[in-house]
Every structure is written in C-alpha cells, then in structure tokens.
Length: 152
Image (cartoon, rainbow, N blue to C red; front, side, top):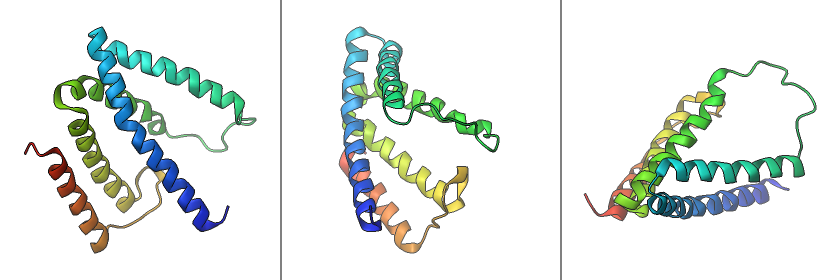
C-alpha cells in the first residue's frame, strides 16, 4: 500500500472506530441501566470483547513465536487500567449525562492527552510538537466540544 493509500486507509479505519465509541457507550450504558449495575455491564462487555479478541488473535497472527528482545517496561501494561476506567465511567455516566455529552468530554480529554503525548514524545510515541496551527486546531476542537454539549 502506498503512503497516501495507507494514510487514507488508516484515517478511515480510525473514523469507523470513532463512530463505534458512542454506539458502545449507548449500548453498555443501556445495559448497565437495565441490569442496574455498571460494573456487571462492564464485565460483560470485557468478556464478549475478550472472546472476540482471542478469536482474532488465533485467526490472524497467532501467538508470537519468540520472546521480545528487550524487557517491556511495566507501564505498557497499564493500558488495561485506562480502558476499564473509561468503560466503567462511560457506562455509569452516559445514562445520567447523555451519551453525546459524555463522549464529547471524552473527546476533549483525548485531544488534550494526545497533544501532550505527541509534543513530549511520551510513552514511545513519535514526536509531533505543538505548532501554532496545531494549537489553533486544538482550541477550535475544545470550543466545538463546548458548543456541541450546549449545557455550559
């Protein structure tokens, strides 16, 4: 795949993934409300997700044939904490605050976090400094989030 084709493919794939986040929030929030337990709804989500993920692992690449050459820093395993925190919080908050409002503030957190991670090249990310153009884009996105929720 050429550079431009890869860029378009990755952008579209992430767009579709982004479209799924509010759908997941609405479904899991609704499940949590119906069974009266955001924690149980989150557990069910992760059981279903684990089955699908393990199925994909074995259908696609399978288990790695060799061990990593370098030791893996422990903080790389903390992603699970952030996923659990996100799912639990969105499952609990979305039915009370609205899926759109909840996801909008998640988006705001993502924008701030990605700018900091990219600017300082944290956690092994490639460096992408905050330029004036990028800062204006971030400010516009922040304003857009607040305009979209219209509660403040």
